[in-house]
Image (cartoon, rainbow, N blue to C red; front, side, top):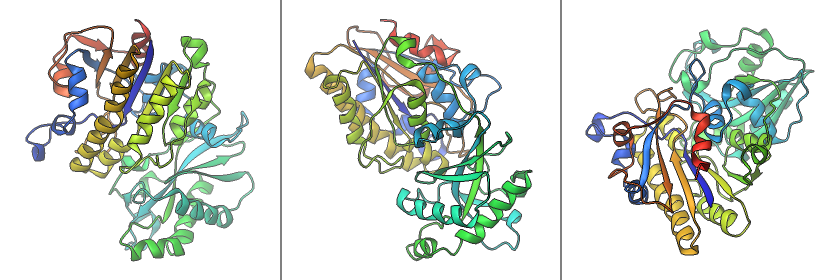
Amino acid sequence: MKYVVVLCDGMADEPLDELNQRTPLEAAVTENMDRLALHSEIGMVQTIPEGMSPGSDTANLSVIGYDPAVYYSGRSPLEALSIGVDMEPTDVSFRCNIVTLTEEEANYEDRRILDHSSGEISTEEAAVLVDALREGLKREGYEFYVGTSYRHLLIWKQGKLLELTPPHDILTSRIGEYLPTDPVLREMMEKSYEILNHHPINEKRRQKGLHPANSAWFWGAGTRPALASFEEKTGKKGAMISAVDLLKGIAVGAGMQNIIVDGANGGLHTNYAGKGQAAVDALLRDGYDFVYVHVEAPDEMGHQGSASKKIQAIEQIDHNIIGPIVEAMETAGESFRMLILPDHPTPIRVRTHTSAPVPYLLYDSTKQEVGCEAYNEKTAATTEFRQEKGHLMMNHLFAC
């Protein structure tokens, strides 16, 4: 038996007037998911433990089978694992987003966050800007590391854990009340705007009609994580396919293999087909028992507030990832179980994450379950299947 999780980040949503009271998942043309739904277990799962923030960090840890209440030590330390930063026990790491702030205000604290991702800036452009921050904000005990796209890292040697606000939670809000209370971090953020706003990279972006990546934003503080081995926990040899450092870092911590796909960038125009083929190769050619295919695009489109683009991302996942994996497994005559779900909702209405339960689809090629006519939030809410603890879904997937 082979096992596949297709994690559609932020896919769950709410009914929208512009979609005739349908969610993006309902409105999307998802022939492959709906075909599986006819013979699958469809239900709802609570991926975010009570009292914890609805981030992709806690949610994906939960789905992969690690209780966040036990294993979570902060978001950015997981990304540090992916980048290859060997943190000391006294280090504190911070996610460093390169964001777009408004420019018309006189004071930094009066500016607003227009875009938490600077228009999904490329890693190549962002690396140049991080180099500028590294040089312009040079201080003993602080070090910047380049990540992927807008997602980067600051390590504070012998630092302090601070509660900081994710930028995607305060889009269009005045930033003053959300700035760090620590004077050094606040000064670094203010100075980052001076360094970046008229950087040549950003002048070129303006000429192209793109958002300038004009400020650093620190959040997601944490200390070095310690995850148990996935293979020792489950008896399954696992691989991760993702474009984002958070998921790659979880894989590193869990001892899973990271499979890098050319053109996978965490955005709407990622290499969906490449991810699907990589999953097929891992399962049928390379001997892996389990593959976790993570796709960031629905979440990013939720943050952008674009229902049409979120639908586009969902349809690409269905057509270029789920369909080819199922076809390849069936053609090979390989028994498999596939779990499809979001990690959390990212509703268009609020443009950020919520803690609501999410719909899941669990398909077993060796059984003919009586399922639902379609896979979406509405059908999942009508069934008897409920999982109140998301970290137990892996046990459910492997319980043949």
